[in-house]
Structures are given as C-alpha cells and as structure tokens.
Image (cartoon, rainbow, N blue to C red):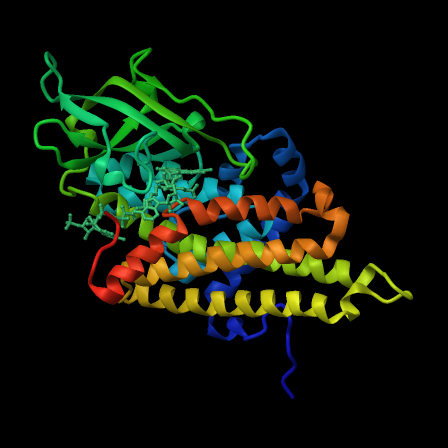
Length: 397
Ligand code: TGC
Ligand code: FAD
C-alpha cells in the first residue's frame, strides 16, 4: 500500500532519473552539513564567504547543466534540484550560485567566443573566478531596454571601446573577478554584452561598492558597478548577440533555477513549522498542530510546494527538449516565488512571538522570499509577460 509522504506529497521523486537523484542527494548533504551551520551568523553579519563557491565547485555544483569546460553536463532539472537544496538553507546562498552558474557561466557558454569560453568557464566551474551580471541600472530596473550605459570607440587605442555607466543591485559585484555588463553601442544604440576583467581595469575606471544594511538576502553580497571609461578590448564583447535577447536568454536559466529554489525555501518553512506545531502546546496541553486553522496553513503550503515542484520539473524537461518558451518560465518563476512568499508568511504565524527570533529561521526565509519575488523580473512584470501571451496585447507601456 502506498503511503502519503508529507515531504514529497505528489511523489515527484518518481519523475527523477538515477543521476538526478544522486546529484540532489550530494547537494542536499553538502548544504545541510556545510551551509546550514554557518548561515545564521552570516545573515547577522551581512557576510558572504566566497569560499562557498569554491566548495560548490569542488562538488561539481556550478554550471552543472553545461557540457565540457569541467562542468557536469547534467539535466536542467538536476541544476534546479541543486538550487532547491541551496535555497532550502538560504536564498542568498542560492543567489550567489545562480549568478555564477546561470547568468555568467550560462551567458558565456551561450554567446561567448571559443577563446572566452576557454578563458573563463573552467576556472568559474571550480569557483576560482567569480562572476557578476550587470543589467539593472539606478533608473531602469523592470525596463532594461531603456538602459543608459554606453560603449564608445576608444579615441586613441585601436580595437578598444570605453564603457561608461552605472549598474545597481548587482549580486556578487564587490567580489567578482569578471563582470558581464550589458550596454548600448553609442554608434548604433544596440544593446551588447561585455566581459570586464577586473584585473585589467586601470585604477579609477571601475568601482564596485557594496550596498549595505539590506533587509533581506543578507547572506549574499550585493553592490553597484560604476564604470568611468573602462577600456575594453573588442574581443571582450559577445560577437553575435544583439538586443535584449542576450540578457533575457541568460535570465531564462536563472529564472528557472529560482522556480525550484524557492520551493526548497518553502519546504524548509513547512518542515520547521510542522515540528514547532507538534511540540508547542497551548490550551489544555494540546499541540498547536491539533488545531484546524494551523493544519490548514500546513496543508496549503504543502500543496503549493508539491504543485510548484511538479510544474518546474515539467518545464525543465521541456527546456532540455528545446520546447520550453519564455512564458512557461515566467509562469513557474512567478507562481513559485509568489506562493513561497505567501505560504512562508502564513507559516510564520505558527511560531507566534518566537517568529521574531532569528534562531527560528523562518523570518529570514520570509525576508529573502520577498527579494526572489522582486528580482529577475518582479511578479507583476511576469504577469504582464503572461498577459501579453494570452491576449496578444502588450501592457508594459
Ligand atoms: P521585448 O520587446 O519583450 O523583447 C525584446 C527582445 O528580447 C527578446 N526576449 C527574450 N529572449 C529570450 N528569452 C526571453 N525570456 C525573452 N524575452 C524577450 C524578444 O524576443 C526581443 O528580441 P528581438 O530580437 O526581437 O529584439 O522587450 P521589452 O523591452 O518590451 O521587455 C519587456 C519586459 C518587461 C518583458 C522585460 O524588460 C523584462 O523581463 N523585465 C524584467 C527585467 C529583469 O528581469 N531584470 C533582471 C535583472 S538580473 C537579476 O535580477 C539577477 S538577480 C540574480 C540573483 O541574485 O539570483
Ligand atoms: P522598478 O522597475 O522600479 O519597479 C517597481 C515596481 O513597479 C515593481 O513592483 C514593478 O513590478 C512595478 N512596475 C514597473 N513597471 C511596471 C509596469 N509597466 N506595469 C506595472 N507595474 C510595473 N539586477 C541585475 O542586473 N543583476 C543582479 O545580479 C541583481 N541582483 C539583485 C539582488 C538583489 C538583492 C536585488 C534586490 C535586486 C537585484 N537585481 C539585480 C535587480 C532586480 O532585477 C530589480 O530590482 C528588478 O528587476 C526590479 O527593478 P526595480 O528595482 O528597478 O523596480
């Protein structure tokens, strides 16, 4: 007789291959044994330890769905199971990894020249070179097409461009060795992608100050990218990709990772709230878990987590078959971030006053999940992407 498993209510494990299960187990073990014990202090201190990416590199967790260059060549679903394991501990740790793996390694893999791939991917897969992805600007977040950063021909140095402008809210920027930046060619107004190698920048041309005192994602590091005529050799520009399709293609992978990642955070909230509700007694010695209103919160959250995981697995499979559309990814990114945030917020109530203590961890997840709903396209922006697909009418402007 089949038994109901509250940790995997719809038996999503049945849909995974042996390899995916093994990768998931490796990632879960590393995250619970190595990351969970240090996250509370890191969050309090607003500290991100770059050694985490080295550790992940050693386990083959970075760029896991890329082929060659020291990457594991696993499925899209496997890469999502890694983000789920990491985000079960903290969305900020997943963020640092997503930028490295999906946005920067993924972008170089997709659009880079053979030389760029050889130069960056193997070291990035080991976590020895760290990446950042600069699309958002102080005046242009949801609407990156209006970006003001530019690349103009170097007035004296042949084969060089000068990059100027400002990017903000950039994960990993203060510690990144290689910064993938999107800017408009001054001559044509077309958006192009550039790789800035920090070590090659003359003093005073590149600054990457950290943004401090964040109210969420405190275990990741976030900053600005300030470019003041950064000289860039033309071979550091992606050769063929032009327009927003470049950055958005990178975002498709990262948004997919977030869709399974947030389910990990929600599953951690469910596990913690369940134990608390079983142990905490109020009114005649009854555990909170005996009360119907508390059970409903757990039932709602478990249902949304189970549905979210299944939907993300389906989109991952379609992605590997070349059949996933950006709208499908918008759908799972929006739904899973929204449901994770709403349910985590409801489960937080079960902890009563103790929810306010960071030792109970749930407040950290709630604060982090607000950020996941905001970056990589705020949920309302994904609503408009879906609305456009349903009606054929765009409502952004
Ligand atoms: P639109 O006219 O829709 O499209 C312009 C061009 O881009 C192509 N395109 C895509 N290509 C691949 N994948 C996608 N998902 C694509 N979406 C659009 C499109 O085909 C077109 O190509 P072409 O060749 O015809 O030029 O552009 P729009 O300016 O109207 O865009 C509207 C909108 C709202 C959809 C878009 O701007 C948007 O998605 N805004 C949200 C911005 C965003 O997601 N920013 C993310 C910044 S990075 C980040 O947050 C990292 S956090 C990392 C972490 O810490 O985990
Ligand atoms: P705005 O675009 O100003 O939007 C504000 C609100 O208005 C949102 O709710 C939005 O949905 C709504 N809105 C905007 N336009 C419309 C419209 N037409 N119709 C209806 N509603 C609308 N960016 C990067 O490039 N790289 C990174 O690594 C990165 N990391 C980040 C890390 C953190 C911790 C955070 C907080 C952000 C990060 N971002 C990064 C930036 C993130 O992608 C943006 O914050 C996000 O895209 C939203 O842009 P915005 O903050 O400028 O908000």
